[in-house]
Amino acid sequence: MKFLKNLFQFLKSKTFLIQLIIAVALFVIICFVALEWLESSTNHNQQIVVPSLSKRTLDEVEEVLTAKNLRYEVQDSTNYNPDYPKYSVIDQNPPPGNTVKENRKIYVTLNPSGYRKIEVPSVTQQTRRQVEPKLIALGFKIGKITYQPHMSDQVLELRYKGKKIKPGDKLMKTATIDLVVGDQSGKSLNLSGDSN
Image (cartoon, rainbow, N blue to C red; front, side, top):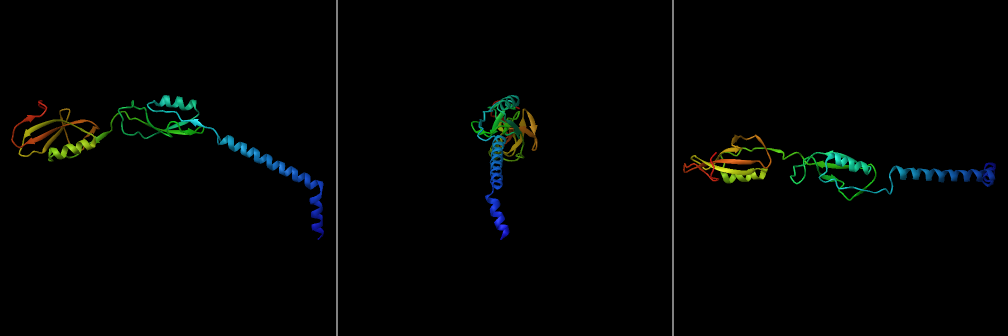
C-alpha cells in the first residue's frame, strides 16, 4: 500500500513530468532523424528517366548513364540483327522512359558481330522437296541447284562457295547452300545456267 502511495506521489511530481517531457522529445527527435536518414539513403521521391540506349556502343552507354548517376551490366548477346551496328545495344531493361532511382543498374544486351554459326544437318539421300524446307527453317538460303546423272532424285551433295560440305560442319546463319541433286534421266543440268 505504501509502495502505491509513493508511486502516485512520484507520478505527480515535477521530476517525473520533466523526465517524461525529455523522453517524449528524445523519441520524437530520434524518429525524425531515422525517417530523414531512410529517405535520403533510399532516394525517396527521386526519379531519373531511363534514356534510350538503342544502337549505342558501350563507351556511349557508360557516358550517358554516368551523367545520370546510373550503372549498367551487359547481358548475354542475342541473335544478330543486321539493323543494328555490331556490338551496339539491341535491348535494355528497364526500357527507355521508365523512371528509376539513382545508382540503379540498367541491363543491356549487345548485338553480336554477326550471325551465329549453325550446324549443317544430315540431309543427303533425301529428296530436294524434303531438304529445302529443313535448311530454310535453320536459317540457311538455297543457292544453285545442280543435277548430276544418278538413278534417284535425291540430294547427293551440299556445297558452300563451291566446296563440298558435310553434316556437322558449321556455317553462318543465312549462308547460301548449293544443292547437287540426282537426275533420274541421267542428264547433267544446272538451273541457274552455270556449272559447278
